[in-house]
Amino acid sequence: MHIPFQAPTPLEYFASLVQSDEQFPLLEAVTSLAQDEYPELDMEQVLGDVDQLMARLKRRLPRDAAPLQRLRSLNQFFYRDLNFGGNVNDFYDPDNSYLNAVLRTRRGIPISLAVLWMELAQGIGLVARGVGFPGHFMVKINLPKGQVVMDPFTGQSLSREELAERLEPYTRRSALTDDFEVPLGLYLQSTPPRDIVARMLRNLKDIYTSQSDWPRLISVLNRVVVLLPDAWNEYRDRGLAHAALGHSAQAMEDLEKYLLCAEDPLDVDAIAHRVSTLRRAKN
Image (tube, rainbow, N blue to C red; front, side):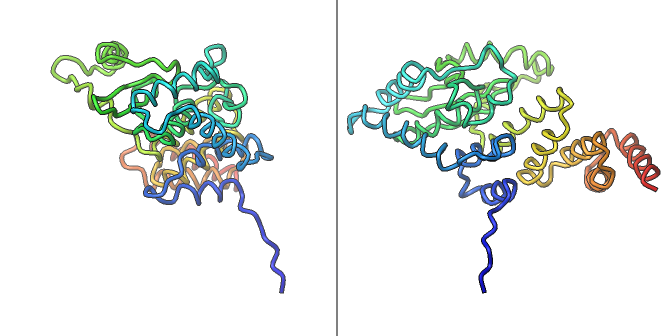
């Protein structure tokens, strides 16, 4: 009996990639985010393009190149020769978060550029990690003589003073000054791959929310709840997006789940009222 092969949906494929924290294929998971916007996306082609960049970079490096030499060669290759950089003209373009588009245009936002840069860095033996710095994603590289923190938007290495200066508006806004001052090192901890993907999805969420683009927002939130199944606020936000589209059943399911599972939500009365309104409209 012949059973036809049924390819997984983009969401099923994404779910298979993000199951395990031990075996988390960051580049592939991030690349797959574009499948909602680009249904014909050839994943193998995109990953193959990155492999080709890696091969070109490796050919430039002597086998015995020291880590600092590797770092300099990578930055020369990535920022100068290939001309990757931040999309300063259209920072909130969703394409800045889709790696197939970033590879095509050579423009992105700090976190998408960081994912590509880290893949190349690790391929040439550098120990590179993402850093979820407030408001601006960074990368850090461990070298024999110490750690380098770099802005992936520009390739600029940042001193402790420059990092503290960038942090100052955030700490002032959050009232984290004087008695509550947090050591800079706490803001430079490595960000796990799952959290990197979550941050990228939430960037897209913010864009589509601001545009009231409910179908695209729902596609993004479908991925967020697969990635972070206990992030109850995301169920609420997906429910509200479904409600905006008139999807009463899906809206009630998500909002009721939020009310059931979220601990001490400040908006419990407003959401409960929304659910009862949806239920009355359905009956």
